[in-house]
Image (tube, rainbow, N blue to C red):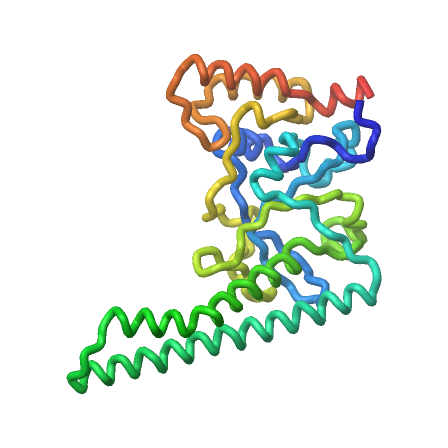
Length: 289
């Protein structure tokens, strides 16, 4: 029996029954979430949020959704899902903000150095080629090797900056929907899509609003899903017993599980039955605990 305040499962809460079924079919799709950084600026992070709150406290988190999936913790760790750090001290918060601002400035300088050196080198190679000198792949490789240390530094600074931004959060904050929220109580874990050339983060409130628009629902995710198998699921939580019966019927009709297409019919049936046995309702939890 687990007597700690943390679960061995990682729970992802969602607001609608359709979202729950979508995750069971297609896996977890990261999408942009609006976050306030320690320095007060706004950023849109592409992520999937989990928590390790025990299932007996599921009712406390209905503000995040009436439906949830509890995943095996080791699956989460293997997929790069990490617990976040909560900052309460003003001194620590200011230190983090100073380090973050310094990293951002240094990272930009490193990027500028790389781009300027590469541009200057390419112009030189083109000029020599136009003058009739023999230039080619060897010259380009020399240029790359010269700029590689600065490129590696830029990548390292970007990774450190991403970690500070993505995996730290204020101990408490104001939320338009819920008022003053003690974030620490959420025991949050995150899967975050790294910021790189292929996966853009949204910097500033204007950029986030431009993506978000004024619709009730967020735009659909454009990021790859985190896939899973049926044996990675420990709990599937619905609101009422009638939802549980409906979900059983919907699972039996599914052709994909967690983003995986299962060709073998017997394996698919076995996976469906495994998922069905893990369904539990908040209504039942209220009665039994």
